[in-house]
Amino acid sequence: MKYRSLGRSGLSASEVGLGCEHLEGENEKVVDSVIKAALECGINIFDIFMSEPEVRKNIGKSLQGSRDKVLLQGHIGAIYENGQYKRSRDLDLGKQCFEDFMRYLRTDYVDIGMIHYVDTIEDWENVINSGIAEYALKLKEKGVIRSIGLSSHNPVAAMKAIETGLIDVLMFSINPAYDLLPEDTKADDFFVKSTFSNDRLKGIDPTRALLYQTCEKSGVGITVMKSLGAGQLLSDKTSPFGKGLTVHQLIHYALTRPGVASVLVGCYTKEEVYEAVRYSDISDAEKDYTSILSTTPLYSMKGKCMYCNHCLPCPSEIDIASVTKYLDLALISEDSIPETVTGHYGEMKNTAQDCIECGSCEQNCPFDVPVIENMRKATELFGK
Image (cartoon, rainbow, N blue to C red):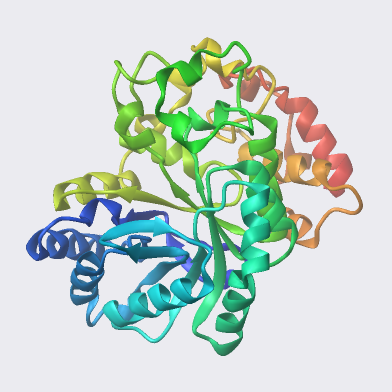
């Protein structure tokens, strides 16, 4: 298992994490087998948004003795009322359920205190006005939470929150199908096949791309939900691309977006955990998603880098995807280039100036990216 820095939070997360939603309603034995398999495989980040007490209790039992080895995402605003999950901005209920989270999980701190499910500008304003944001800040000041997170499916609402500087970690729905969708698409429509018949869908929506770049630039780490599109992207019948992708291709797609640290895969069984973490051991060819995306009309990405490194090998051993990512981050900066971007670029062993303009990368690229031109721009911009 490989681990990535979770933005400016100071935390390090496994590339493959566990989304625990599917464990709700399962018995203690099943929950224990899935959690123990995850720990065995080196998974160290767990998202637990579910407010139902029994599943929290069972997960808490399974994690006993391993608390110092894991990162817990606990949600502020996911409450349990009249025997059902509910999203709420009621501060008292939010406090009660968050304190229940710590009690059931047998912990006195939470690594990522997630402000739960904010999908509109109006709801973000509710978070501010209700006192939820202030509550999260006070918890962080006291050390009860180590970083403040936000879960969202909407790039506009997420960007609004990111711009405040309050958010350290963003939990966002990322996969190649959802990335096509315009900013005003509602989360409930993600699962409707007709959503993807829109003629406007011609590659990654610019608002989504800008969100990921902004997170990378500002040090906000991204954890990914819905990477498999509720399983729809795995099947030829339900995938909007006409061909299903594999679990590992979808994990790889998310991990190649700027800012992403961990992909939280939902698993019903320990076998599904073992399959997900095989990502760390399989070949680059098995992870490659470009063979599908580059042949579908929905992904008209000509000239735009997908950061997939399908252009390699490079005779100068340049990590072309990283150079291009840092170039893109620099170009969206209105004033000066952020120090984090220049710092990461400067740490590269081989930079754009090492390009010999042989053109092999452009021949390999399935999206016709002008790599040589990008290397020239990066050399000029970064000075090497």
